[in-house]
Length: 448
Image (spheres, rainbow, N blue to C red):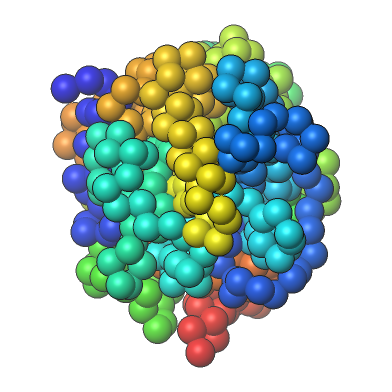
């Protein structure tokens, strides 16, 4: 089995029956189509209304991943130069995809290629999605386990990458501090290492954690990622097969333990986590911190900074977590707009297939995204996905993205971020109770 397929098979086998794993650094279109909300900052490639051969159909890709913007623009230009087909790319700013999608779908020339990231989105967008069953792009996949289906069995979107996230570690800095990353196998050891590094930060010249930033651009690291540990363990206990009406918050104390550790042992003061301007990955690349909360999408960037890094799980003090693995899944799934012309649908299908099968194009995507779940895609050398694979080989369970079940992000996550803002400034029991209420009570409120 190839390396990329083995990494995929590792976490897919632990997906606990989900047809789609979800939750990343943006929002995946979870409001009702037709509500024209505000737009976001965006980048565009060449305008298909002025270049390209319109008789061949045209492509308008509304890109979900801000970190893919530069590559997407370059690939669009390459394909247009190669085929003459007009390709436009618009990239939504982080956290604004849902609003951008709603706005763009109301225009005369809507996206032909967009993201439906999870089953709840499938129900809202299924009338806008071409059924991809038996299509060229579906037939190019090497697994069907991450496809997104609507309740009537329609294949509304297919995955274009596979990711993992957790705690990324600069192995050299941990060694300089007198520790071995391989010895960190649970929360107690992580806490020991982080608190010691923080206490000696002036001596060492670096701190434990990069900023657990709570600005609008970055709070997804907490409200969409770290919170997954609470959902995952509840799902693991209760065997969710659909979004539950309520959650218990049973693992909120574990979430608090890890969150407190990251914010109180950081190169950024807790009170400064609520203001814009913190760039956790930049801090990590500048060797200001030994740990950062991020995912496989940053592997190439971190490697390019000359850092020997690996990834460890979200250790949080649950029983048996020495056998925990990384958070593995995807919310990045392409759909084709069923409302555009047949020529535009065909052009979009051909562009998608080219992206994941052309050796050069797929290599560029793999460099940014980690793994493409397609038979003919370029192989991956992503260090963090390799770490996920090793943990699986060692008998660890993958933490699937239980945020698949999270209520619509645009309504649910901002109140969590707001409560966390108050908490990091004043870490009182009363303020943490408000965080718990935003997560637990907010879930129930969002269901009805």
